[in-house]
Image (cartoon, rainbow, N blue to C red):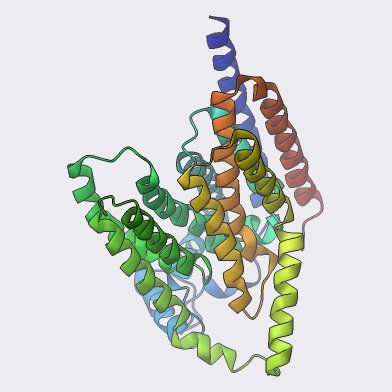
Length: 372
């Protein structure tokens, strides 16, 4: 009885805490006006007039694809959100933040509200660029929004690594809706899209080695993420825009990319990677047990980070998706500890409370002293 009362009280406190954190983030969004790229994407990129209809967005994205870059899924959504005004955009951003926390929890197969609060807190606490990945509208759609559907796709794929299989009916339905989900996952960002393809192929190989039946939707997922990634990376606009980039020698390019890769690993992603690495060591050497889905999540983050070696630039906000995959791995391990090792509960509650307080302070600081 006492255990049940404690669980109910903890659930209530966690939902209140998550609500407080999301409300403070809403205030931060409201304090952040449309700026920089927002002002450009709020217009028809061909005519320069304010976006007022779906045809305006279609016309803009066709021009964008051939003259600027391949992220037309993200930017079409961005134009739609911008056309609704700042307050509506702010509300959408908070909904997207809450949804991302829920997707992280479900992908991690966590079962309690403490993990939801921890997810929401870590998204802020570990974020290398809170302003440009979540508060700035262009960054929010490109990273906060897109990470949700990427993780949804990841959740579907790594579910096949679990021992319990779904019913045939659900598998047939999945063959249909996996097509658009896989396409937009591949057509998201230049590192996460191809990594979704690698994850899917890796899952197929794992099942083949284990001599298990390979569901047809995995082949569909691999094909559609590959198509989406190709459409993103090979967009004519990428090559047009590259003409305006200052030319450098091959040696300078390699050195620059290695430098930015090392900086990102030691700065942007250090908290999340370090935390995840500690938990990985605990799993291997203390618990002596690690689930295939946890290996897949950690490997996904490593591969996505490695893919950034191919990128000519690596702004802080670009680390957001990798950070969220690492958070998913972290929540997966911590949830397992919380459910199966009761002695760790007080420590994990304290950890979540600490991350929550730090996240609140970080958002409040952003409101008082914005990045720009």
